[in-house]
Every structure is written in C-alpha cells, then in structure tokens.
Length: 607
Image 1 (cartoon, rainbow, N blue to C red):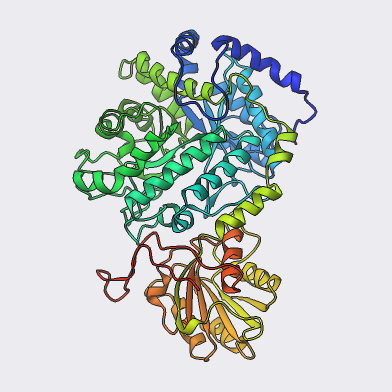
Image 2 (tube, rainbow, N blue to C red; image 1 turned 30 degrees about the vertical axis):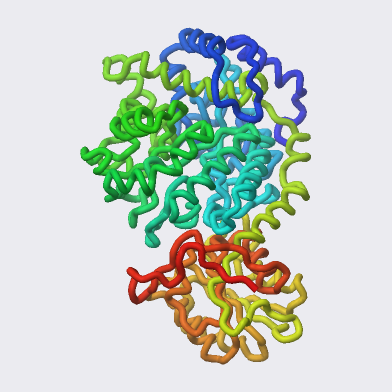
C-alpha cells in the first residue's frame, strides 16, 4: 500500500488534534448513527465558528483529482491536475481550496488496486488534518455495482440494482450493500453515491435503465431501504439518487436537460416512494438530478437549482434533514440554462449542501465567496451546510480515526466469503423469460458442444473479458465444450456469416444480446443462427427488453449486466446447476405494439 511505512501512531496524531475540536463523542463509526447528540452539535457549531470563510466554502465542494497518490502522482496526472484544477496533486488541492470531499474515478487513476486506494485515502486524510483547521474528508465514489463500478477486481463485484430487483430479496440486497460497504470502508472510501432510487418506468431511458431496481415504486422502495441499511451498517455514508426521480426520461442529463412530465399526483405515486423509504431508513445523503419537473417547479430550472424542489419538496414536504449533494456539476443538464459561475450559487440558494465536481473549481469556489461577500448568500446559509457536512463526518467516525491499514484491506477486500456471497446472491437474479419445448437446462450429454457468440460492449469494472469469452469459460468449467466468437453489438454481414458457419457440429448456440433496437443487426444475427436449425439461447446482458425484437429463439434469459458474477450465474442456469429464480422487475412490451405487454412485471420461468 502506498505510504505503508508510516506508523499507526503517526497516522493518529493529527487525528487527535481534529478530534479535540469536537471532543469525545459516543457515536460509533459503524453502524452510521442517524442523529447527532445536542452537546456534540454545539461543539461542531463552535468549530464552524472558528473556520475562515474560505474554509467554510471549501467544505461545500467535492472534487475530482488525478493520481494514484495524494502527494506523488505520475507526471501525466500532475499535468492533468494543473490543466484542469491548477494544482499538482490531491494534497495541494486540499491546502488551496479546503475541499470537504474528493471523488474517486477509475479514469482519474484513483482506483488501481485496493492497497493503492487505501494509501491514497490515507494521504488525503493527512492533507486534510494538516490544514489550519484540521478537518477529515469525505472520500466518495460511484460503486453502484452492475454496470457502474469505479473499483474493480480484486474487490468483490456484486449484482447491480435491476438484477437485485429481479431477486425480490431484501436480505440479499442488504447483504450485497453490507459487503460492498465494508470493502469500500477498508479502502478509506467513506461515502458511496448509491443506491439508485429512480423508478425506471420508461424502457427508452438512456441513463438509468438497469441502474434502477425496477418499475414498481413499492418494490423499488423496499430495495432502496434494504441497501441504505446494508451500506450504513458497514459504516459508510450513502446517497439515494437522483431526486426527485430520473426514471421516466428519454434524455440523458449528462448531455442534455431532460424534462419529467409527471403530474404532482403521479410524482407522489411513482417517484416519491423510494426517497421516502430511504429517508425512513436514515439515509445520510440524497443526490439531486439535473432534470426539469414542471409539476414541482414550473420555472424550468433543473431540480438541482430549484428551491421549490430541494427545500420545498425534499426538506419541507418529505422532512429530510441530512446532506443534499448535487449530481456532477460538469453535466450539461445543469449547465445549459446558467453559466458555471452561477450554478454553485443557485444550488446553494436552492438548499443543496455539497457541490459535486464542478468543471472549473476555481471559478465555482470564487463565485460562492463573492456571493457571500456581496450578500446574495449569507454566512449563516453557508454554515448550515457546513454543519450538516461536519455532522456526517462525525457520524462516520472520521474525527476519531479517518485512517485505514493494509490489514483492513487484506482481511476485508475480495475475501473468499465475500466472493462466495456474490455468487450466491447472483444465483437468485437470472431471469428465464422463455423456454420453448424445455430446452433449458442444457444437458452435457445431449448438447455438449456449444457456440457462444454475441455482443462485446465496453467492459465495466467487474469483467475479465468480453461476455462471450466469460460465458464460454464458465460453461467449459461446468463440463461443456464451448467455443467463443465475439460478433459485437453491430455485427457485419461477414461476421454473421462467420457465426453461421461456426454452428456446424454444434448442439446449441448461446447468443449474448445488448440493447437490441428495431434496426439492430443483432436481430439479423439471431435470425440467421435460428435458421440453421441449431437451438438458440439468447442472454440479454443489459436491458431485458431484447426478446421482444428477436425471433426463432428457443430459450431466452436476462442477466441485467455483463459483469462476471452475473454471467457466471447465467451459465449455471443454462447448465442446470441452479434453477432460475429471477422475476422481471420491469415489464417487457411488445415491439409491434408498445401499449401491450409481452411479459409483465413478476414474469419468470423455472424448471
């Protein structure tokens, strides 16, 4: 681990200085406490009063930074930091802007391996405690699992939200979150931007989809509450997202400003229940969405910048008292109406506490300072948010001890018990949609020789290779003779012909499909393979709607992701090692008549 030579005693020395500022708290680091005692809150208020305005404003920001080390990143990362932020490394970022948190990304080279991550986290905390006012940091990431995971192997990778929704198991969802939370905590990551509380009622949703637990508000609410409980029992903060609900849109807020056309009554029935459940479960933070909801605020402002939504609905109507964090401020959804200097000020005026990853930190930081000095924002308003943030840090035990050790990593991350639990949880998620003439499970005597073809989308963190290779390897380990041929998400005529030729001598073909559209050549591939007379088994490896556009299929499964843990589970179902138990958490409409349902919520075959 980076900086492992620093002694435990030395690591704790600076912490003692910060802890003295808030003195003895009885709140344990784990599980996360839901309340702050009055006496401690008063001490935190006194700490806030001693902070400079610059320090207070800095606490509101959670920022990206490039590099595997807080003080010694690679030169390329130094260059990227200087170009985008004006600092060399994480330590300089903290000393210059006094940021309250840092967010990790794989693309920023923050998450190479568990020991490196732990070392980076320790370096960040040392830098925070070396300031004039020693303050630990919230270290955050997006570890939703499934298709969104910033920390990859050897950490345990678990089924994502929609797969867990298919399991209908609150204990399984809770256990998955507890395992994920424990591993993040061991690496010094103390805030996870999960779970996703969006109700995905729009099959065309380009940004949520399988990141949601499903289309039924009550079912999603139960899963959200289970995961909040699981994560926070492991001692980390959670962030239910994306308030007030991003589940019914055909636009991606990363690239545009979506509008949700639900009436207030529809919002109350469809979108609100998971957030109510998260609040009831004691969720420690809630993330806003860059979406327009005219029924809640007719101004046309995105929810992140909307006082009627953040303060009126979330704070006053739903009674939420915890930390509110924006979605990333570099997303186009929040930048279209106002400039980058206005966005952070308007977010704070709306009632937000944490400002996540602005595109230009210097501009945003100075804009907030100027707004306070000019009277647009009051010092009291800034201090309200700082106090909430410091209370969260205290509840996580960060004032007492923000550091982790190599031993924490070794005894927690990617353990045999955690990996076995991930497989066990995944076994309850695979959904069998169709099984003509009882083709599945395949028999090693009857269908021994298999061809595995299909899509090879960009790999999320939980994969060791293309889905076709992972499936073929898993089937070989289960006693079949499987050959992999990657045909891609848009197979060419030549590639389709190659796949058809490869079926000679095969007893069955397994096809991994990925978001099949009306014009997708994946449809041609499946039809051509079915025309050979060799039985075709399709495995939808992302959204479960593919089967509606495919013909000639003998059997069809959906896994809701193409991570190894879910593909291995699908292989066990195909081989009959486990029975399919997943039930559709979203409806699958007919392709020729979207108003009619082909497979309803709750559909799922077994054998």
